[in-house]
Image 1 (cartoon, rainbow, N blue to C red):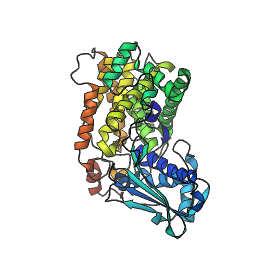
Image 2: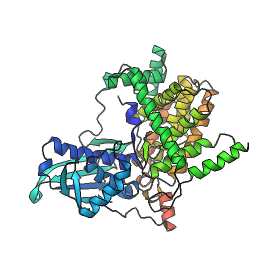
Image 3: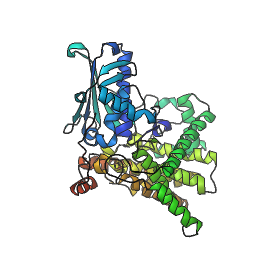
Image 4: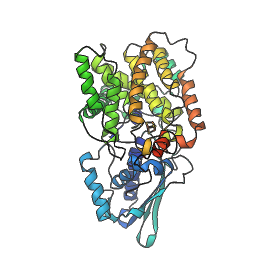
Length: 466
Ligand code: SF4
């Protein structure tokens, strides 16, 4: 059984599958060398990058993340202010501190980027090989970054989590979750707290404290994004818009010319601009779609009469349960199923969470989450220049607005007479994603990415610095 803390992970931008996942894989490889007693013998490591990671890795910071991960850094604890100086030192000195303790030579040729090759199990593949003196192979490992910052080795791929029986209320579908809520007279949030308590061994109150910390990290990210000015990195010359828009909207609001409706759009853009700048963000369920849940939650806290610390926790507990259903039964990887698996899933999570804390029944929550995905089916992933900027930033804003409206719509009906269930739409999303052409799945080889490239956007996805 997955944990909601697998869905909501504090990390860094710009991409969960292309930045967070590769950093974790590289750190895992370096730690494995240490555990196997091979670190001292290692004099060279080669990192090979395949498929979508190769095609859009430059824009997503994949190669930087790999270097930092090999030095033992992890997304949640890497010191953001030291990243650029560390990378500059690795590249100029051609030295890398493997696992943070063992100095090796690392040259540009030690990062091999396979643009035309894909490893067999997933579009986001990585292979690390450690060598001793005279080129003797000490250890090699294949990893897949399967979306939302999840990383598995070749051997772990496709295996179900081993702790399914370890929770009191295991659920594999929305139907099962609904049945459990009815049978035990519990809300989705209460079920999730009890499961998390069993998974972590913590008391329910401690689980709620961790959820509150995730909410705070999201709020901090919204507020940082609203206060930062400037141009986003990567070469597209995209300006941060959220602070300027927020300022203009505040003026209009004070003059009585604007209500609160546009705020979720700006909050989401603030988070995604932070993400694009490589800032501290929470996956929800991914980095590319990291703006939607925080935006809707921030809006709820600021403007909703039912807002309270407990309601904020319940929002995330409910949204997290919906995220688990998508991750377990379909995919949250843009490289696997397109943007419907990122922005679509985040919209579905946010709509369900907002419906829950607005007084929605389980049926109404399900209906909100279902509608939010139904109208994202088929959404492709075509980030311009391989950067999580165009169309990603605005798209998060629009999905945040949609989530609130669909949650409100769900409350006007009983949710019992719906024709399409959440389980049905999750299966449809997966099948649509599998049918989608691979060029529309985080390769920047189609869609807006190609149209804008034709117009001579000064970005090349093939410019690699490592
Ligand atoms: S288009 Fe969607 S899935 Fe693709 S990078 Fe942007 S947010 Fe992620």
